[in-house]
Length: 365
Image 1 (cartoon, rainbow, N blue to C red):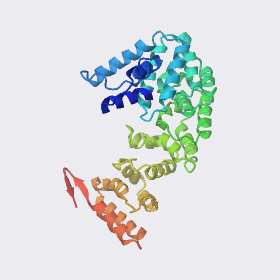
Image 2 (image 1 turned 30 degrees about the vertical axis):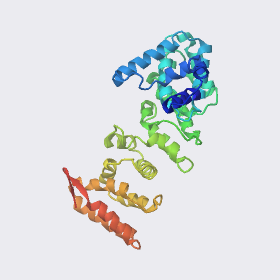
Image 3 (image 1 turned 45 degrees about the vertical axis):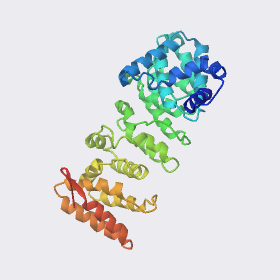
Image 4 (image 1 turned 135 degrees about the vertical axis):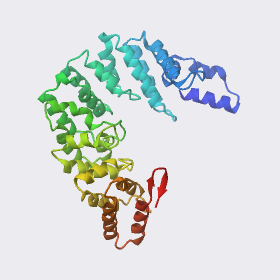
């Protein structure tokens, strides 16, 4: 794969090179697999959707006659591609997802192919959700659990998560609820890269345990200090996703204090959390004093050299939309003054940010 990159560099630079030597690789089976899986804008006369259909057809042509040995070779090529300087892991991973869809047409060997992929450490991270969903169509719940637990691989906890997410509702019992809570307690906290795992994806377990989201969230909160990243995988989307405050507050109605702590941890960890302040205002409707906890978190955030509080105040500015905005703004300004008593610059900066708000299409001070 590196050789192919070098050939393109030589061509662009118009440098002399041994074409036969390069072609011994670029015409090889290995490069054909890599080039097909990599995809990309190869057909400039096609729209994005048309190219997507064409690319999926190319992958189908590549693997439709594959046996287990062929899949093993393809996975090894994918693993090698992970070492390239310009990694195409996302594109190749998406292509592998197509390949698994095609492989499922032969259900006799599908499980073997999945097992092989796990054994080889899931090169290029094909999307686990569809793969696991199809496993539920050919294996029992216990057989799937045994398969996913069988090997050590970097994305093991992500695949185990999909096991719980894709679990058919009719298969969920108390033992599955207990397994899910054990999963939360025993998470791999060393991982540094993984896709989001929205906690609400397992709300269907409420049919057995109505407080499953609360119980699971309590366990996850205990992991925050050791791995804020792993904690964030489960909560990054719940304050910005297609979730209403009404639904979210209902899910956590038995422990709203827990939900507030999750919110404060997330706004500290990720500035983009609730960036429009929609949930902050809803919290304040239930407990006006929550603004004090929120502002204290802001004051403790020392991550930027100049202590910029823009994102924090951006959320607070949503109070201008409330009927009692004057009272709320006065309360906020008073608390800022008490917090920054010895820091006049921070107080003035926060008040300045707070007083600049949008009214219609205009910015108003």
